[in-house]
Length: 303
Image (cartoon, rainbow, N blue to C red; front, side):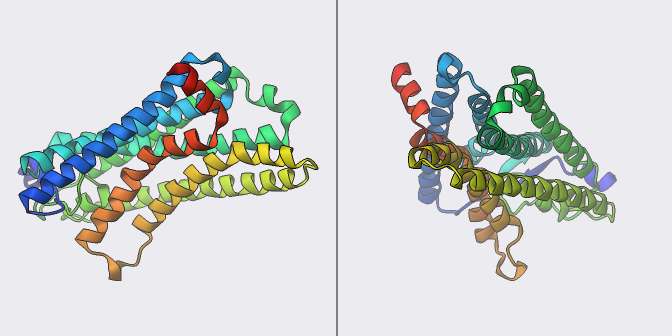
């Protein structure tokens, strides 16, 4: 514990030590961040202001956009500030807050994507029961469960990780504070508790993934039985954006955490972390706005 008390901050990794390239990274990050703010902000405003979009599917999409904003706002502003001011420092409390809010948004978002797959399953496979199974009260309860699940998961991991004694320096080989990088600094076997929590979280993540896959297998079977080509096209058009978002979310996570250790390097880890922490929140609004005519119409009315 005495060693841990000496750690008052951490040093984050940077893309490069060249000032011109750091400035280029700042403008790149700023462009992506502003695009994410604009895209998610427009979707939130359109859904909130257009009564045609006051349905369960768009209620969950509004929650997804809020979580995307929280996720990208947790990591990217600090990376931009470090690139602009040629600085690598982050305080101990700042690092803890970054881990907590990122895990919270990350966990709640995947829970919400699982709920959205259930919404599409009920809408296509059990349309006569849609109003009963996805009433306003049920939707609020499910969204609250997703946010609450993300909060509990984040709280457990953050408290456990930052209660570990650290004596391997304070340099993190990452653009933002990440639990695996912090565990590398631990000098105690108590880090195995956090490894156990990670295994439990990974199991829950896998369970949600299986639920999504099973839901879409049932959805595709039901859609293929629709005799009308227009009916099949309409059913697919409501599912494909969600399926694309899930695929982007899961693929970036799998690339990040399941890649072979033999190909691991600081530069590759930075690129991969950028993929799963920045790309989904920035791209999700584009996926939904391009594939969803209701969103397009609402944005036209809004603008």
